[in-house]
Length: 66
Image (cartoon, rainbow, N blue to C red; front, side):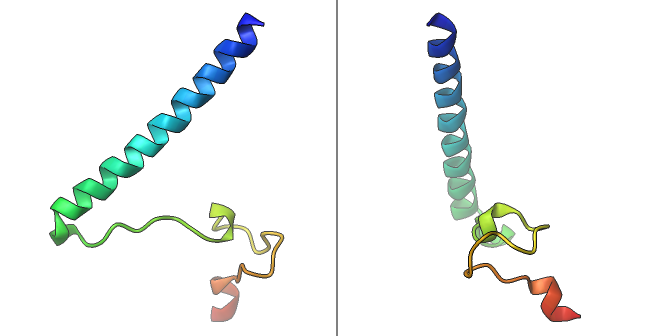
């Protein structure tokens, strides 16, 4: 039971750390507009190498170039 609680705690800490990093990046780009806008990686399940994400909403931009 202890192992389960420790694992769940570690997963929660990792997720919260990821949110903190994203927020820090947003604040950095807000304070430094000379570096451009903050671009979040969204769409296509975050997998840019995959051609099919299992849904109709994902389109392959590299296939359109050929």
